[in-house]
Length: 616
Image 1 (cartoon, helix red, strand yellow):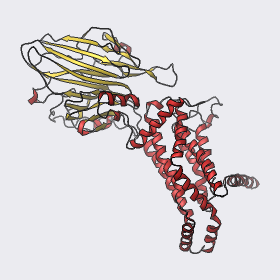
Image 2 (image 1 turned 90 degrees about the horizontal axis):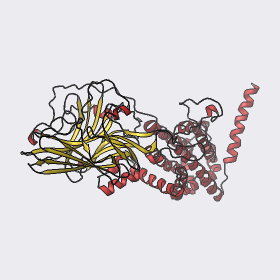
Image 3 (image 1 turned 135 degrees about the horizontal axis):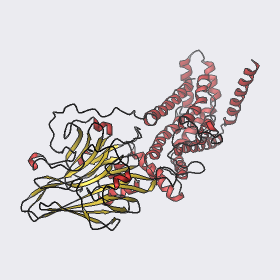
Image 4 (image 1 turned 120 degrees about the horizontal axis):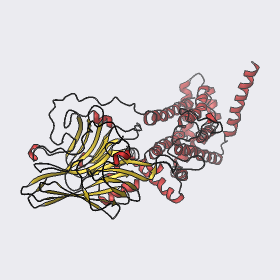
């Protein structure tokens, strides 16, 4: 009896663990917080290190306040216009690569038009391409900017500067050079190159043809106007991200940034890190990101800022290099990079390795359990390249995990088989000591010791499955490789729930199923396999325990109905393998398989209940 109670509490505990995990990590999207609070201390002194635009600027001892730089808030010029109309406001240089299309604005020199050729908004191959960058004036401005700030240097390039170009198209192996003369002795050149993926290299050159020395500071930034729609899950970070030298990984959601102290003015909040060497700063979405990447060997100042005029918020990740002292007749250069594209695992890792970008792999949110999620992805990716299907890869990886944990599972199932074999003796003990629970428990433990039975061994298969479950969920949720990855039949996206629904008989009835009911074919298959797995064991003698174990597959079926299809397929396949494994071990140990008797008993009870109800 004591063991039965233990099993009941263990089952309840494991069920609660999964349910709470589901609530905390998946079904508990963060509520949309209130709009950003007005700056409370308008008299706060502007700290050194930023301009009112949020771009790091020199402190007074480094050369006085900086001149205004691009990146300011929009002025009152009417509402937003279409993206096409905003693009037409400036002459442009085309961007054409195997992965990207778009353009660079000659007015301002911004990279503000980028689309991802290989990714669509939906699984339909004819749906629009993913648009990453859009110019100022459009509904969702998002762009990258490069330049110089400084004092007593005369006019510097701004967002209104009209550059000239030596080419019409930027493509891999064909860089373009932008040129602008400020008319006061400084000539600026910007050489922009791009690779065949998502990395831009920008080399800033300035020549001092004047008679006096000047001090300049190179900067780059990624700017986003307005808070975008976010997934809102705790398992995924969206917003500002950076790795800043010894300060390590820094992550700020849009709402968290709004809670920072005043920074650069009463209408600006943010945070900055000075004297940083190595790393990057940027803005990340679930699958896409843009990051400003400074030279990895020279110190810089990195900052995250949020400016608002009361109606529009501008979120900005920026870097500013150290001072460049430019004597008369001298010239200087500064090279920075921009990542703008999809967070493909191998591409990100190659950039970290080949370009020496410190911890660039953290652009992908592997989570605290990266030591499980990363190997899980590597295994799935390996078998994907063998079979060409991530769904098949999930099945193969699940089978390999079964082989890996076979010794533990075997010991567990052998112990469970022995426990079934001594059921008559346990029943005799309960009958003998039915009025003395303590002696019944002592006698049961002596029996376990004699027969070398571990009463909690049956929990190990479930305990092993839980971290694998969450690791696979994380991989399915965050990695772009899983996005729109098909399986077979009706599963066209393993990262999305099964699109079928029992409500409309899986599409046979001519109306769409409501969004709050996600109970497709694969969740039902999973529920059946879980039901069969539980029926492999003897029915608990306690009616309460029996009801708990009976309803658990139903609860899990509804709970997993809205999970990614790949995860439900994994769970169903894992259950199937567990049933086969347990069946073989039980037969090998001469223990009767209770499956068929339990199934007959279950359906007999159901028929009996219906008959009794009919007679009454």
